[in-house]
Image 1 (cartoon, rainbow, N blue to C red):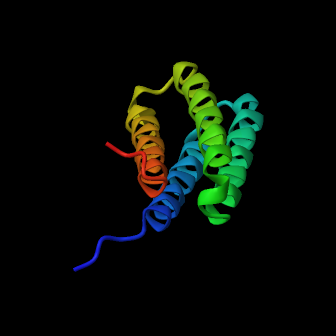
Image 2 (cartoon, rainbow, N blue to C red):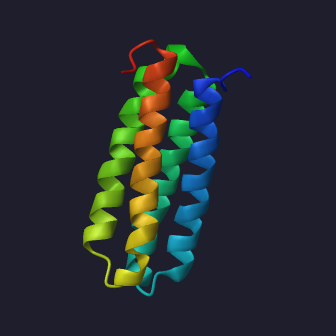
Image 3 (cartoon, rainbow, N blue to C red):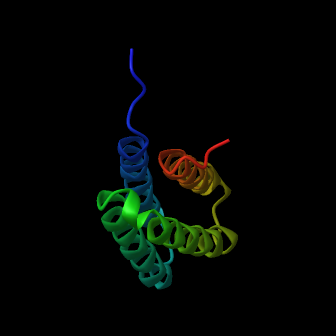
Length: 110
């Protein structure tokens, strides 16, 4: 059995993060946070574009992923609902999985 392509794994994990962000946005009780959620969604779209371009865009994908992590962290720290913390955590874990997959594709994994 062959291992899946790391970039395909990264994209599949990004799909899960996108779905989680949609859930977070729908569950949010503060409409003022919607622009922040929309910015994060845009950053994830940009990350996807760079991931889809392959290994040549890996550095840009990782840079966007770092920006997404920062945006998500700001949202998490400002969240008023402890019940949503697992969603934030799962997205951060997904970002880490993506970073590991991209670095693996570049031959820089551990």
